[in-house]
Amino acid sequence: MNTKYIFITGGVASSLGKGIIASSLAKLLQTRGLRVTIQKFDPYINIDPGTLNPYEHGECYVTEDGAETDLDLGHYERFLGVYTSKANNVTTGKIYHTVITKEREGAYLGKTVQIVPHITDEIKRRMLLLGQTGAYDVILTEIGGTVGDMESQPFIEAVRQLQWELPEEDCMSIHLTLIPYLSAAKELKTKPTQHSVQMLQQSGVKPDVIVCRTEHPLTPELRRKIALFCNVRPGHVIQSIDAWSIYQVPLNMHEEHLDELAVRKLQIDNYAQPDLSRWKVFLDRLAHPSREVEIALVGKYVELQDAYKSIREAFVHAGAANDCKVSVRLVHSEKVTPESVETLLAGVDGILVAPGFGERGLEGKICAVRHAREKGIPFLGICLGMQMCVVEFARNVLGWADAASAEVRPDSPHPVICMMEEQKKTTVKGGTMRLGAFACELSPESLAANLYGRTRISERHRHRYEFNSEYLGTFEEAGMKATGHNPDTGLVEVVELPDHPFFIGVQFHPEYKSTPENPHPLFVGLVRAALNR
Image 1 (tube, rainbow, N blue to C red):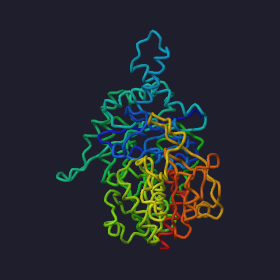
Image 2: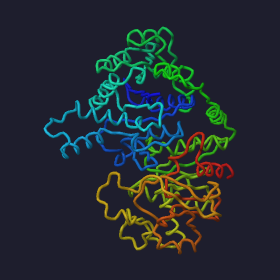
Image 3: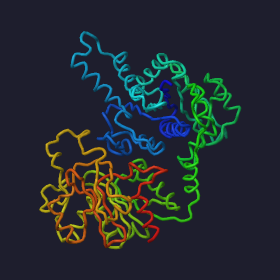
Image 4: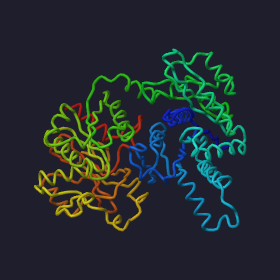
């Protein structure tokens, strides 16, 4: 069977959930026994989102091979349980960088380099790249942005060309749109969808299926109207009604027969009926928790829910695993002071200090760590959160009031967090951190080894600074143990306080590898400790 390609575009408004629809359809096809992956094409000119402020674009997700990517790749991995890679996220910046580099090298000698064919050819090459590996039966491609956006036009043109070049049975187009409800008129309006589809068709792309985001069910009459005026077959207009959880969407899409439409259009014969039994078990636990805990997430981007997307989803997974609902209290680290910490963290059952960069909000994170340590509240520090628990211990246990991270105070007499040696000569910001999966050896009797159930793990990283090993002996004598090390460099990856009910800081990002069917053990452990408290 040839590799099949499904292209997903969006119209009317942004943030309709193309990534969730793509993930849901991919999950359904996967449960039918097909090998599936998803890729995201983003129209911004940044090479990747690694240098973007989370307020700009939400969380930056990191893959196993060290790509800094759009947060939708996190959804892809959580739904599919399959790792993505650098090839799964492509931006306009990457496309232009490749074409301009080739032009400078003389690859187009004598030719005028243009959007068509040179940019669109490079887009098409990357759209087909994963399919050429032979590892996948179906590849879903999400096109970022909204149809009609100037920056998305080259991607839409590339899809048009592929629809013409590929065999008809190897290519499918899905358009996600919005059906708004006008409360004054008390009716759903289809005109924005009609205009969106017309704009897509004017670009030469004919959708095979229209998925309609809606707050109210679509009547059969409305579906027929959309099908008629958008020139799609009856039965190919389906609704994506607001769901109580993003993890309910695959079941909703199955009820709407989206996966059935896909296998029929792509003429896929050798498939099984979808087996969603494990997914339904997870959803049942999620929908009917018997207990509840509240965990404070202390960070500096809490106003934007997507800034800590993977962490929040990891709590959802860990809550279901513990048969409880995890209520996340978002605490802005800039507001946490010695005077306010008791009030802001009053009554919480656990505390997570989030990752981040820069000086803003650091002192608040240190206050939160001290509160967790002294009050015996279960604590997890991730990346910068781990570094701040080291700084807090140095200041308030070792008595080094001037201890700091060299990232914000390079002249500190006690730089307990220092820049990694290989980072000191780096001047380029983008894509130069310690990125991707690295091995870690855990001490056999440690809390971490107990949670993981093994002593050799692999986790993903995104940092330039590390625990300063010159101080390791002093820390361990005072009670903070380094229980996880990189086997090649000796870099401290995990610190713990054995005398505390649950206190662990990790240099890596465990949230990136948590999925509904395999919740991350550190989050499961934190929630369990919060329940025990």
